[in-house]
Image (cartoon, rainbow, N blue to C red; front, side, top):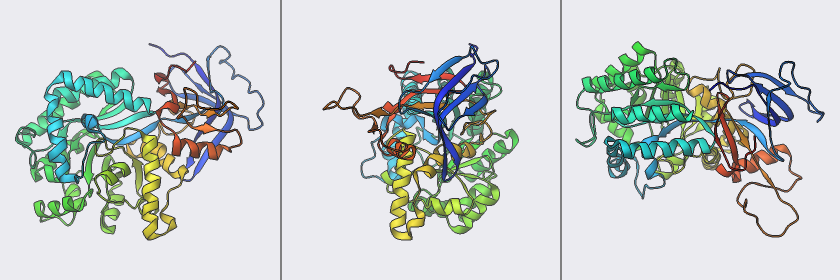
Length: 457
């Protein structure tokens, strides 16, 4: 269905740089029939803004009191198949968590009816949290992976969908039978996405070795060749857990480090997303920077599984590209707003040992959740901010004012604004106390893909 010209009127906020928000308190953003931003008008003095020529009859969408438009969140690492286990991890750490909780759950996805229920739920849930783009891990199952791609496209979410490859250190009932079958099945998923979305306008296939220990040298090399031949992006895990790193040393004794395993396989490139990256050496970080690979920081998961505290400030200072990932279900939530909050808190725990310079600010956490994430998934020219020519991937945030009445109304639990807060303070309140109830509406490429009942376009 064709889009109408639409003008979005009211305050808008996006990240101008890593530590600077651009807050426009009175703006108009015009979005054309192609879903791209055609113009941005702003008036800092609060006067009525005139309509652009040719836009006099466009549809108008307004914020409400204390509301603002903000770019859609970009989740750079999430296991869609693990969503039923969100919040379920007991006292486990990474390797026993995989065997106790994860592999049994993922093996369910041979049942397409069950897969459909789970995938529909996780896509709907992430959209309700304002996540307009997600890099999804599926399972080893080709039909279920293709189903996830279908659901993302039908619901209008921008997504990277990867069939998980693993041919060792997993149950016999849940792994690739051979190198050849891993490549064949991965290609089948690539071909399916090419069929449903030939230009990868919304859904993009992504090559997905689970992590080095679960893949033989031969499978990693074959996936590296596929990565090179197709030019498609790649996602995997790295240096999440100290026992995992020791396991890599045992399994790959002829490699200098975990990072070198991927490099030797041809899987460390500018299109590679490396999740976690907690325990990297300085030499590994240097190699990652040289290869221009990207980092997905997953603070909630890293804390839940007691994997460690990633030194994000060090990565940023060294010039690495970093975004945020929820890592459901190692992470307990699919909310990127919560993940931004967790990133701030983890950085403060790092600061307790290494000094205040390690702290991330609200502005920096929001940058990682938007522009940083856009860089990680290779779409910085299309999403992450409100510039002319970018796609309108956006969310409308609503904050509730507190009146003179005593008690709480039915909207209790939303961010409470008392009227004297600066815009910086409103944003901080949203980050620290907000949730999906503040996400009034969500657009991807100009299409409304989620809204709350109270949203009145």
